[in-house]
Length: 288
Image 1 (tube, helix red, strand yellow):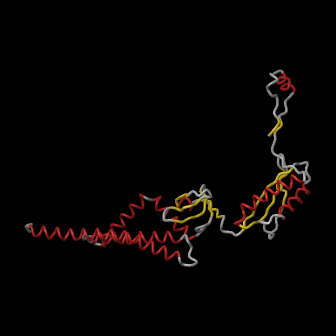
Image 2 (image 1 turned 90 degrees about the vertical axis):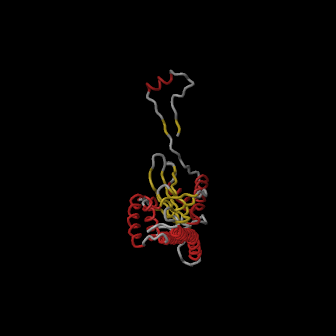
Image 3 (image 1 turned 60 degrees about the vertical axis):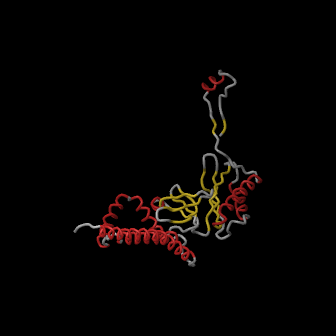
C-alpha cells in the first residue's frame, strides 16, 4: 500500500492522540494514586480500634496497586494486549524477584510483622542493635524514634529475623537491683533496711510486694537483690529513686557498699629488690 501524505497525517494524528492520552493517563494515575492513598489513610486513621501500624502499609499497598493498574492502561493505549501483558509481567516479576531478593524479603517480613503483631505503633522495642519507639511499619522499613529523638530506619527483614523485646506490651515491669555489702556487715540488718526502703517508695507497687534475696557471695561483697514491681510508665523514675534511697539508707546505718580491690603481696626477694630501687618509685600498689 503506497504511503501518502494523508495516510501519514492520519497515522501521526492517531499516534499523537494515543501518546497524549497515555501521558494524561499516566499523570492522572500518579496523582490519583497518591490522592486515593492519602484519603484512605486519613479514613483508616479515624476508625476506632484499628491498629495504627496497619494504616501506612495499607496506604502504600493501595498506591502501588493503582500505579500498576495505570501502567496497564497506558500500555493498552499503544495496542499492547492485556493477556500477553500478564504473561510478560509474570516473567518480569520472576526476574525482578530473583534480582531483588533482599527487597522482597523486607516486604514479606513487613507483612508478617503486621500479621503476627509482636509490637504496634507507639511501643518501645529492641530488635538486635536497634531500639526505639515504633513510628510506623512500611513496606520495606520500620521507623523507630530513639530516646534522643533520632529516627532509625531498620529493614523489616532485620527486625523479623532478630529477637524482639517489647518493653511496652505489659503494664508493669520488675526492677532488679543488686546491692553488695561487706562481709563484715550484718546481712539481716541490711535486709531489714532494704525492706524498709523498698516499702517507703511511692512508685513501687505494693502488690506484688518487693522481695529480697541473698543473690551471691561475691569476691569482695555479699550481693543482695531487691525485686520490686512498678508501672511501666514509672519504671525509670522508680528505679532511680530506689537506688538513691538504698545508698542513703545503707550509709545512715553504717553499712558499707564495698568495691573490688586488689592487694599485691611481694615475696621477701622481691621486697629486697624493690627496697634497693629509687625511693621515688612505688614498690607495691594497693587499691582498686
